[in-house]
Every structure is written in structure tokens, then in C-alpha cells.
Image (cartoon, rainbow, N blue to C red; front, side):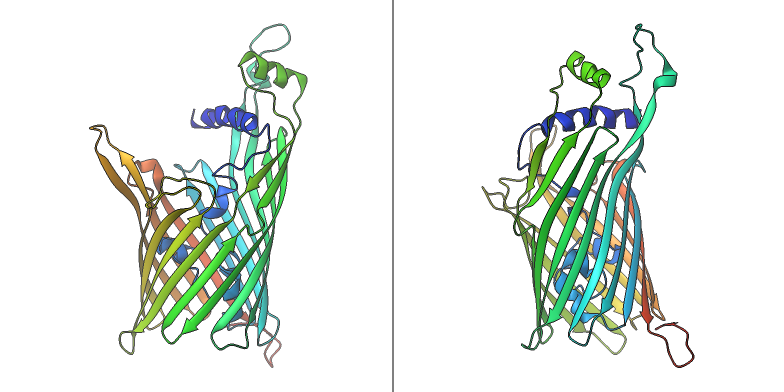
Length: 365
């Protein structure tokens, strides 16, 4: 029954894209985040990211990769397992000053029942005519980063290609650019990530057969036509600090401010056209081996059943283990403490790989 809901949602989505628009939540799957380390810190990560996941968070961070290659993989389930979220990335050093990366993100709901053909031409209900389809969003990001001649300054950029598919009914191709910088000043870290700096354009095309069109007409849905969807720029500003507590304990903290430009949003600081969404996270590490992470974000203003205004938030928790070039991270999040269906468990892996040594074998460090 839950997946039947997505069929109804899909019909509404097709109608919503029947004209050129700049909706607030266009390509919003790219705002979820990647890597359990970052998710455990409530996505407060644009200044401190320094590994393969920089291709998503801030491409400037790729210039800090210390090994020859890095690979990262992540899987998560959302909404009681209905939606699947997967991520994979590869990064490598070009030389001592520059690096490149490639990242893939998929967010999808699979095996949704398609009941638009349930009734045959004679008006009979035929359950054998029920098929299934997937709704999936893909992003392919090509990243480049370089160290500046100014000490502590790094910069980078992404070229991203978006592909979105709704079964055989509709698909969209999109293109966009991101840019980012990082600057280290002693133990302080500063970062800026500009997403969709030129706006990202998704060109939708629809393929509906006559029977599906008849269903749309019978249910009062507008017949969608080819259209363009626009994702407006978002700027993320961050500041972080690293503190060495002792020879074995290390502290890392960061606070970020997401500045959206698509009009008033239900966030902590609302405005038109700019709204500001703060979020923060901390990490405590022991001997660069075990890590504990906490974060808070997703602040929203809501009204309860007694008509009292209050602010909800999303707490996050994470742990990590790193040994001989392999990092296993886990994050647990509860989206606003609203429902058991909104609890999510996220796992990610990261591998550091060096080039062949004198024995001719590759090694993990």
C-alpha cells in the first residue's frame, strides 16, 4: 500500500512539471548528503572535508588527499526501506598540487505498482495487467581541485550531469556547475561551497500512451508536456576548528549556514528570496582509530495540535573506525523525531590505495 502512494505522487509530479518552473525542491536528492561521517555531523562538513567525498561536499577538499587513490561507497534506506540511497566515488592525485574525482549518487523507489492499465478495453478488471516501475534520480559529478600558491588556500569545481527517470513515462537530463574554496588559518578552517552556480536546468520529456492519457483525463490530472525545471543557486558558508586535546584525543567542530535563493523556506531564518539554514557537528577521535560524532540540524518551525509554535530539529549520531587505510563509518539519524519510519541507518566505507610498491603489489595504508 505504501508504494501505491508513490503512484499517486508520481501522477501529481508529472502534472507539476508541465511548464517551466523553479520549484524550491528541484534536485533535492542532492541535499541529503553522502558519507556516514558527514551525516553523523549533520552535514556540517564543507570546511573540514579532506577526502574522496569532497567531490560532493566541497571539491576543494580533494587537494588534501594524502594517498594516491581513494574509493568510497555508501548505502542507506529511507522511509522504512521504501527508498534506497546509494553513493560511490573515486578520487586520485594528479600531482602534488591537484587532484580529480568522480562521484555517482542514486536515490530511487523501485517496484512501484502501475495500475493505469488495470482495466482492459472491455471495462474488465485484470490484475495481470498490473506492472511495476521505478522512480530514480541520478547525479554524475566530475571534480577537479587545486592548491593555491597562497598557503592554506584550495579551490575546486564540479561539472555535474543529472538524469531523472519515472519508469517509461518521463525522463529528464540536466547540467550544472558547483564551485568551492577552503582556507586554513592555524587551527581554524573556513569554507564556501556554491551549488548550481549557473542554475541547473533539467529538461523533461514525457512518453504517455493513449490509455495512460485517458486515465489522466478521467482522474482530472493535467496532461504533462515537455518542460524545463530550474534549480537555483545555493551557497554554504562554514567555519570549523580542530583542537588537539591530548596526545591521543582530538576534537573537530564545524558550523555551516546554507543560504538558499529560491524564496522563503521553513528553516530557522526565513527570508525572501534568501533563507538561512544552520547546522553543526562535532567529532572526537581517539588515536586516529575510533571516532564519535554528534550533530544537529534541519531546524523547522511547526505548529502543534494546541496551536503552539515550536521549533523541531534533527539530531544525528555517528561512530567510525579507521585502520590501515580502511574506514568504516556509521550514522544514525531521526528526522525531526516524528515517526519510526523516519529513522535511518547509514553505513559507508572508504579505502586508501597507494600505487604499486617495489614488490609489484598494491597496498592499503
